[in-house]
Length: 354
Image (cartoon, rainbow, N blue to C red; front, side):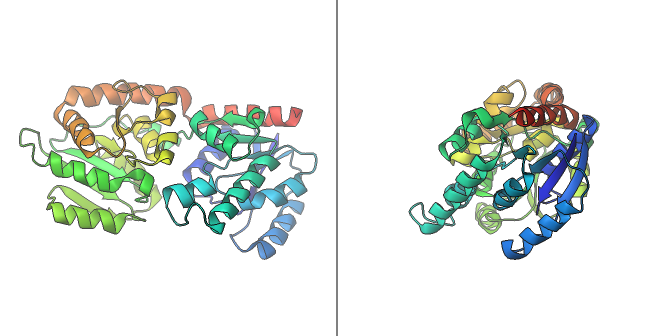
């Protein structure tokens, strides 16, 4: 099967790279039908031209976040199956998580309509968790067209060696400081952790920048934290090396509903790398992983519970080893590119049958 990756999608985004690599590993051929992000008046003609010159294509795939490319994809797909990977809802992200628009605003209604149209145009919609699927159904997706394919991790993270006991326990957060990540909650937890004088040496690196970066840094300053470093953005290519130097990977701790539906890339990457992972609890995580077996799951938005979990993992080398080993084994069972590619290829076969 020749699959066209269609739209103004981000070739560097991990989800897109994992699925593309996975399809290739599963024996599919992939053709990139991709243009830069522009207004639809410019983007749509460019995409139509790109598809016309792409050669034979058996099916179209619209990758993450490209809701606005779905109407053209549906038109150009004709009888070919069309599979959409929204990854998130625009309405849920912009209104519920980022709070950029009021729930009763026209912008909120507009983004909800974009979600509904995009979800209903696809022959098949993939979601990373059934918790996310329930939201998609509320937004208009047909239940019979939903298929779960987890986020997973790129092979480079599975190939990392086991962590070394370097004396100082390094905890790593990497991300866009999004509200669902709950970095201010993490900062409050670290202020409690710094009071525990019985723990071995530890430090935290916060890599990235985004919506709550200034809030988090300001809160760290007010707490007078001495073991927290804000490293700013780093190239994605450096991420495997960053994780290789850490013993603990930090996930998402925000109290919002979205944080409970997802399993973030950073969590999958940490598990694949055999690192002990601490992250917020939620229906999404529980679909794939068990608390205290594969990762430590804590109540989201609760700094005291998070501090207690961090104290456990910092102070117990055996616990870190046990979690890292079991987490990597589970991630390898369900989240390698080859595994995800095979599952996605099955989705295309079902969509073709439809």
